[in-house]
Image 1 (cartoon, one colour):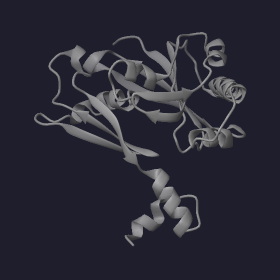
Image 2: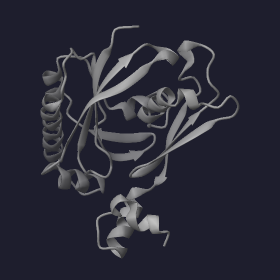
Image 3: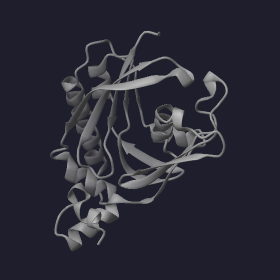
Image 4: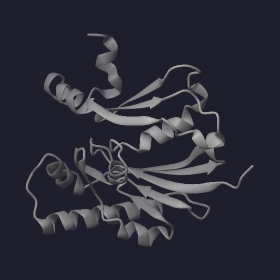
Length: 224
């Protein structure tokens, strides 16, 4: 059994309902890789939420305003990191940043990483969409790799397994037949954004139900 490695991952979705941090313990490599979430912290975006929302929908913002928002967003990440229950040295911190525009091959994830770098005292990776686009991907690199690990025992012996995630936008992971070699767990894995989802559903809930969203899917469960 390999020694465990610990990492913290940050995410804010297009719904802008808060920032999530997960402390993950991993062991092994390749097809033997295992991962367990050992702590989770969520915090509201507070005063940043309306500013991020305006920026994402194309509202004009000065260069000074964008710089300030990016810095304050990085400082929020650092504060959330301090709340995480981390009992071991961290091997890595990953921060996605806030998607304010995504129209491949162009994409912008807002985040000044330096407050987080100073707080983490370990390697910090960020702007993962940009890195994926530069490598020829569709700009959706995180979920496909997690799916490849989490669903490796469900991968079909023939054909391709499709995993659909319904967030602010729909994203799809395509997992081909299981690889033969331990180092091939990610070979042939594809992931991409498909179309809007909860943005439209929440707008419909607001218009038809007078609520920000369909709580617990209660109305949807009635089938009408």
